[in-house]
Length: 451
Length: 89
Image 1 (spheres, rainbow over the protein chains, first blue to last red):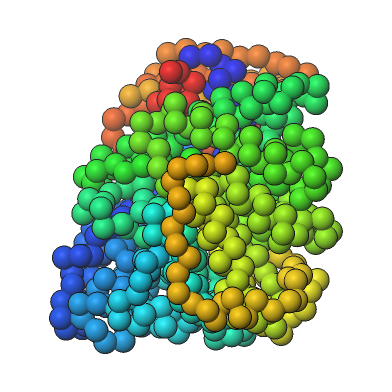
Image 2 (image 1 turned 135 degrees about the vertical axis):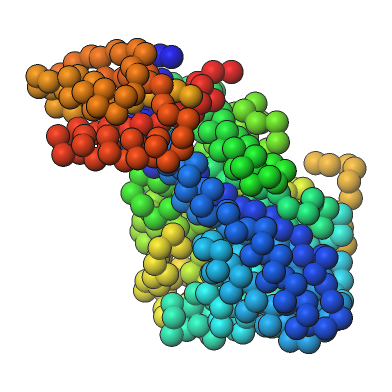
């Protein structure tokens, strides 16, 4: 074994924030559905605490033995709207059950308080969506997501309009607590069913009963590799450097994932090879783009650099693991990325530029703090724009917008921990109300004559 | 089962002896050692056989890393598979 390889790995972990971001256990709750909501909750609690009882310990053991930090252990479950459709009753009961079960097994987050309504809403879906603000306000670690569009189905504009209102309510109900309700809610287009990352994780109904997914991270490692390559290299060589780095990082994820699956006697699902930033210095996707050669992230050139980064990460990762899935690419959450926070605070990075960036990277308008007086119609219209990008480009897009109640442009909202902090960013103050109130559906796009 | 011990710190006499002694004290067999001093920074890599018993291995890891810290050395004990996975196709 070459000692320079060993030292490279040690340095990646010690100095460049390389880690396994999450081991996420996906658990199907379809067999917990019961016409009586209390019975249903009981079965859910029992199944989660049984299946995931060794999850946290196993992650700690692997982390210790292999010397790799594993930051989070999480659970994703079947979209709860399906259970609400069977049982009826107050969906908040499900949220409380998930919260308790997740806390009792010691995980950081549980995702799946979700509904998939890209084509239409069942009464169960509607009940769940309308309960989201209260559910997220009265629980701590439950995450919620709603899929409002897809390339195959188009965009459900009734759901989009409803989500504008729900996002706002989530913030209002938790306004004394940093508006954290909205930070646990993602509105998707083309949501993936095997995503291990929060807040958008849920366990799709096409998945096995229980699976283990792994999400790797490593923006710091990529940045260092780009820095070492030097400023005189052409872009294709930089792409090559990123690819090789992504390969190494993903191999680590593959190893950890298969070990965890083996020890927990659960099938291995996927490695999500996303570059997931944190607010820590040296763990930023924005700084990679700047390292490639931009003065500030958000200026001209940003979209091109991000497109190359995202693609190179996928190429390296696909070679490293036979089961790549989830979102896989570069995440650009503003409040969770030290470089993005700085770029937004300086005014260079705007929501409009972020929207362009989401057309070429793996997710969407993520962890963006907007003025508290932004209307629900405007929020819905931003969601519609973002969903349109996903629908037309055959990719996942999402919105996690946080209206900072009582705060104005330039003020800071702080969530703490991995969710970070950030400035309130300006939103164009013109009314999209008539369009939003039309409701209905944006039809799915044509799949030929592509230009 | 084998592990890789990496030791990094400011160079001074006795670092190799210290690490080797810590291993010997616990009956850990050293299979291979490479070391280098670059601009005053001492770097050493040891390949060792580790106990099959997980608890014993965890104790060894914790104690060695702690002992290193007390000496101003950064010591990592990591399973060899991680390096094989990352650097070999």
